[in-house]
Length: 610
Image 1 (cartoon, rainbow, N blue to C red):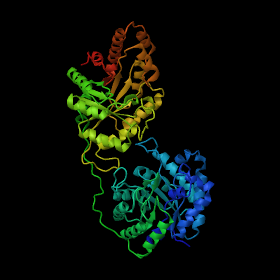
Image 2 (cartoon, one colour):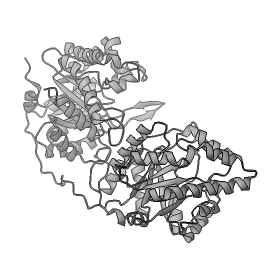
Image 3 (cartoon, rainbow, N blue to C red):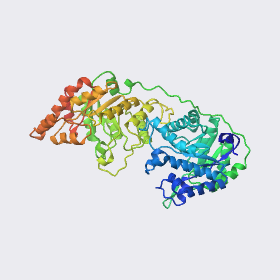
Image 4 (cartoon, rainbow, N blue to C red):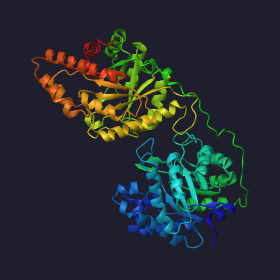
């Protein structure tokens, strides 16, 4: 009769099985199939894989349930089969394992980002993991194995969610990159300490990299915590050979590293993508050759206490920020990036705006998903050559979170201090409708990310050498169709760290006042968007095709009554001035658009203020 799993780990090096997903693929199952559903539709295949690992000497096998959570099964229309897939996966493994071999319930990450980077709440994440854990436990697994997590925050919720309901041993595996750190830059020793603090009984690493990188990282984990450490390395980095991903690291190579893992103090040793029973067999031989052995402990050289520098005071972040803090009515004008490589005209326009007394220039990031010069490059050119501050828009559409953070650090290093963080228009609106939208995070998640940089820490919670000092702006839509939802998102943006907001173009004064009343409890400065109309067609376009830009019928009729283009443009400027005059007592500033790139238009709108 086998001991309880945690007791067995104390006295033994545990040989874990190898890959499940790549083994299923090599046996002829297409990659677009739900592998977890095979527990119901092809259980004999899963039994064959389990048998091969046990025959090779594995002490611990994992269930075929890595992706059997509510969110992932929804893609296949299988969300109602969560209980059946997980329970059957556990029962299949237990049947093959018998009474002597241990079974781990495999649980993978979610594809959605957790708050504050995404929309998935902590409580919902916990419930998802509780929902998957229960049928695995009912199916008689000995331990649960959380695997291939790249987000330490999600790992925290998975551990807490499971541990607050179930009394079962829990292994927590994170993934790392070639540098030995997590996706967000957290070093392995800190990962180990945090996972132990969250409640994991065993901590470790799996997937993503081969044995060499993982050995270095695992050694640091062993040194950092006094609980067992588990490792499951990939068979190297896959290489594309004739259209197929081939893992090149051999079973013999893995055997050598299994010996090194054991000598370093790792107590659970398995393998991941690209491996099979042959790897397990060779690893088992290597481990047997060095037993018995004592657990290795080494001093951790790196400091594990994160030390953050003090954030830059808000008023010192930029001249624009100082003006708002001093209650000065601020002005900005939007300059759309050129559809080409020449920035001469935008620079000359920015110079005129500076000479007129405008505080800053707004630079949109790919407005309406059209192909234009990057906002970051034009922002740098204007700020250097026109000597006026910019408010650089950053859209979430085109870059993943790591890419955006890299761009932001570069922007701050070159002197860009004011940001407007937006989700961004979908590509189908623009000239390249087949382009892929990233939307790794939305504007709320990006606001959290920038706030984190301002606090002197990266996305992994690691201290930066110096904090950024961005003045963080966000968008607001007083004319949103679902105003309750818009206000909820606005509250989240402020909670995430927003320090000012710029609205969509305002035409309906009553609607704007209703919005302002609804956000009275949210104390950040509001800058109103002002759009000078230039034709009845423009007014109707805004009213019908631009979200939130609701043009009242009275204004539509006034524009329709004009007799010429010049008369329409003059009236558009006059209406913009009227709107600005009515709004001025209630706002911190105005952001004026520049129709057709005609710089005289915004200057005429602002002439009583500048």
